[in-house]
Length: 259
Image 1 (cartoon, rainbow, N blue to C red):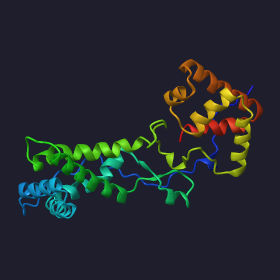
Image 2 (tube, rainbow, N blue to C red):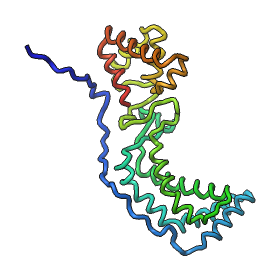
Image 3 (cartoon, rainbow, N blue to C red):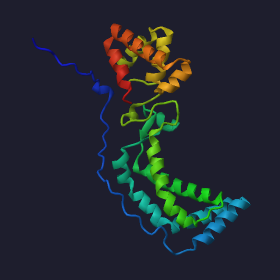
Image 4 (cartoon, rainbow, N blue to C red):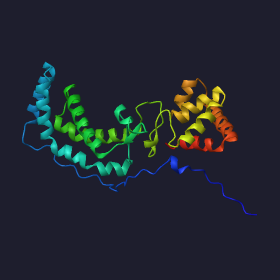
């Protein structure tokens, strides 16, 4: 008697492969001397601090620009670490603006190298404003040498967390995510929507939150005011009920968890 192997049902058209060639750079480029040595960092910091205290954005902007030029070696080095971070942590995604959503289906897009360049400059500016807001023991250069790279790395790593803390961590398939989720295929979308609508309210609500809005288990439980046991029982019960009537809709709902 021939026994068929049980294999999961994948709906490939709902999950196109992300076309990105990941690099394989596992050694961080060596750090250079952080400054050009052409200007006095302490004097520039004093000018920036005075402008900030006086509420003079124009003067602060000039000091900030000169500091950026002086720390250009550090900034360029951080920018050169893009392939390293991509190799270590993998690709990341960022939320689309409302204007971008007009021409794209997903709520997220790939975090590209140009975005990373902006992130590096943002971290530098945050380091400067943070330094000016405290009474540090070390110089700005020394603080940059100790904290600039960890801040850049943590900022990139944390991009796996969606803007809405109730949603699950982003994955390599998150470019397909939109809340509430909408299937690429209109027939599949209508089919799943009808299947979910036929569920009793307690089961329907848990599917809508967990599968269609990507809520974490904890967030869904808190929203519904139920225990972990009740949550799991409702998810299993809902998927079984859907599968009994329409197995394809059940498979499509399960597939969303990968996103």
